[in-house]
Amino acid sequence: MGKYFGTDGFRGEANKDLTYEHAIKIGRFLGWYYGERIGKKAKVVIGKDTRRSSYMFEYALCTGLMASGADAYIMHVTTTPSVSYITRADDFDCGIMISASHNPYYDNGIKLLNTNGEKMDEETILQVENYIDGNLEIPLSQRHEIGRTVDYVEGRNRYMGYLISMSRYSFKGKRVGLDVANGAAWSIAESVFEALGAKTMVMSKEPDGFNINTNCGSTHIEGLQKFVVENHLDVGFAYDGDADRCLCVDEKGNVVTGDHILYIYGLYMKERGKLLNNKVVTTVMSNFGLYKALDKVGIGYEKTKVGDKYVYENMVQNGHRIGGEQSGHIIFTKYATTGDGILTSIKMMEVLLAKNKPLSELAAPVVFYPQVLKNVRVKSKPDAQNDPDVQAAVKKVAEELGDEGRILVRESGTEPVIRVMVEAGSNEICEKYVNSVIDVIRAKGHVIP
Image (cartoon, rainbow, N blue to C red; front, side, top):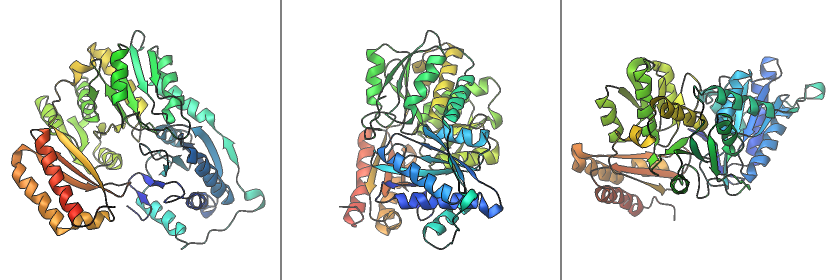
């Protein structure tokens, strides 16, 4: 990770940590780097979520791009995976998504994608940061070289057509609930499901610039659980603010996580001879229950660091077809280069229809170990993580758990947060051990008051 960019872009509170000046400079660099630097006019596509500050960052990025001679194609409110798809499908030099994903409305972020729709490489990110810090001079374009903006809502529409084409079945006769989190999926998901024939009921679809992710979406799935049961729906799908993740709710109102999805679709692929290398890619945050279920059906697995970036890198390097995170970032490398919540829900509908079984039955073999995860806001992530007393506390917990559980302490890639997670035989044991480590972090003065 760089000085400004984490595992999922440059993220922070709008005009405090991430300012409009940052956005202008990012635009200035990208316009020059993909354009005048190599003697051409750069083409860059931009999407945004529904946060109020997304408009400010959109205009700032466009200003910077045009000042460096690039043409900025604006998709308006759309999802991260749609920007990824259009970047590679329409031969853009790079793509930009303005979103802080599942964070509250007052945060925002800038995600950079390369011409293949993949997360930008570290070398280019470091050069962007070098320019932000004033260590590089970039000339202003003049006269006929100055760039322009292009309304590119057609890109969003083409992406919707692509999603519709991904389904092997009609959804006619299925009652589907969608929680679009007052975010980027609100203008896409319902239209796609309706086009595929589902009886679609949607919640959290009135974005006002301030209510994105507020008590809704994949981070607050309890609302969808109640919605599915009360309306007697067959299944529900919840997205986050930029719709690159998806969690499910079965017909009984139970949550079906990313780990369940990896099992369900991984087994479906294996049964059809489509699971290349007979492996799925997980992160270290996946539950023991997933691995036990995969072992029983003879499916292997890889484990990466947390972050869909690392999952994707492993998949590309080793030729794996499906991977993801418990949080709902699921990647199907045959169809996408990033997590795509709406695509994931379409693929889950495919399994439901192909097997003609309810989601609760498909998910039943994955029996989770109790897991408690708590976030601690700290002054310095490295200082807290590397504190000898904190490390000693973690080691003690690991030794006491033995083979009956595990502890994982890691830094957030996007926030000033240390995440402490314990899996064990009961919630009480998990709570005890998580709190024991957090108490040491607090006692050593690392916690933000």
